[in-house]
Length: 112
Length: 114
Image (cartoon, rainbow over the protein chains, first blue to last red):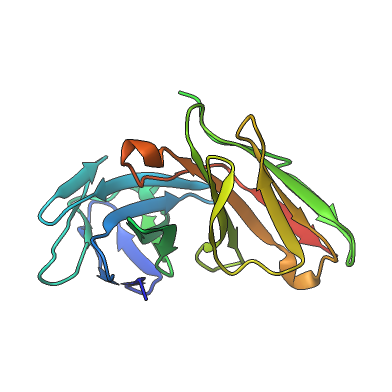
């Protein structure tokens, strides 16, 4: 079935370090891919998305490129800040199966 | 911009009691989804409604039921509560008819069963 596998955490980085959180997917159709962020005690916020192969989603300095050949949607940021500390979820949604499938989440902690 | 509204934000119930969670989707969104997120876990899809009809069903226990009303708000009814039902319950909405599968999440209802 459709599923998402993402890099297990937790991830601890120093401020201004480079971030990569790996995400790969399995889907029978043509999924849309998403990254959601969850700050402590809050709900899920959409960070970025990509709806077809080679699309690049970007927001707040974060980027992810939809790679069909490697079935991946890795999240990257060139210089993380303390305020980026949160749990990041990779997710997919397929046209004929409209529920969102989430990865296990990766907890990021950025230290000053 | 208007977001998804959930109420209550926090709820404490005892075992075997009943709980009702409410969700008000973003105006003009046609689809509502319910998710359950246990401590330290990823959200698990429970059920969804498109134009007030159930459209998809996930890992929703038989003790739970849900519906979407004519004003598009949705309610998740949970009966015979168990300790394991303690979790964060999210509602999300989207505009599927517009070709978008982007789901906007509410802040969640934290249910604690004691």
